[in-house]
Image 1 (cartoon, rainbow, N blue to C red):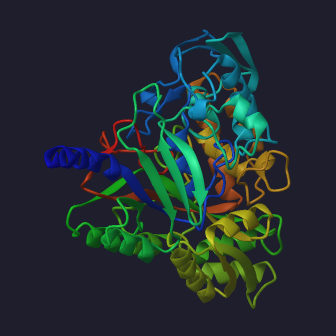
Image 2: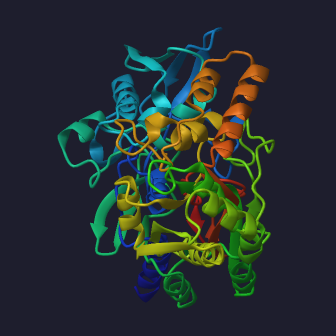
Image 3: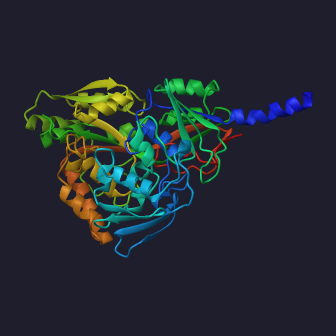
Length: 504
């Protein structure tokens, strides 16, 4: 009898140990609606709960490697306008919410394309129709060829497929329902709990649950990890920190791409920044190479263009503004500000932003530019910059790696605060609208690349922003955690959790 009891107890240990404990930034979850989740700390949990028609293979951010996900196959018309997808049979939604059908897919993509329900509506402006052919077949029609059409349908941002029934019935942002390997269970004070989706089409996950703790302090996350309270956490993207953490026993530091591209956006509609000479003075006053040295070569890549490195259409052939304090002061005087200017910035308290902004603040001061910083927690920062309350906005983002996505979201007038399709154009930049629009429908790849290059040149000529550096992702995991793949990249800014991810 005693032997039987011991066998039962030993059998129960692995199941109990299969709750993965994750440390994320932020105070709490912002939204779990995948079509609205723009904050870094929401992207990871959302990506564990939802699938797309196609997917990036776990551990990859290469669009050339997209593979079937909810769709088992697809066909593309010769002109690139019509894509027909055949869905896998019998895919189940979470919580017994039924079987995936083409109606759910059509509803999801239409929802992603609507500014009333999606933060990524601008990406889908060329979506003409989503047609249900039969329960397992859906047809996606574009008005014109889109450079990243398949990427719009991947397991990323608006490509996430939701349950139509769940979205129409209740508070979807707090009770999301998808088809991914993990399903929402509860929001807790300072945390979030997901459980395994037992009927996931790729198999029952090896992890029984995922417990997410939102810990805004880097030091507190690190202490929680060293105390054995976390198995996986988002790290500090600084060279010295990475090197120190690598020395911890039974620890793996994952540094992967694509980076979140760091940019300083200057509000061209707000005085005195409505004068291009003042904007150029700000840029000349900032020593970007010194900032990159501060961050560290392993985690930061200097980059001079508005479109991040590695994106299709990115170019470095743009106007440059070398660090020159004397030139900055001369431009201010020329603009009628010989005594300098004062600017306001809403700044997040997270470690990837606040220390850099403090360095920038000190550099600007040497040129007679006072930067008044309103330091707030991360969720408040996101809310206030979208209310157009910041003249100088430090922003980091990763997007589908095609120039169009970055140029459209950050530098097209349709994406400025106050517009129905507001995205991330906190600079209110509009100088390259014509080139951005023309490139979207240009069938000749060489001509398209030339239009994207001209758009980047115009953005820099107008000094809408100061590109800083590409900051790679840093996550730390216990060697007990087997991801189930080699982590080279993740567009969702967190290690993918799949049915094969396990604790050993």
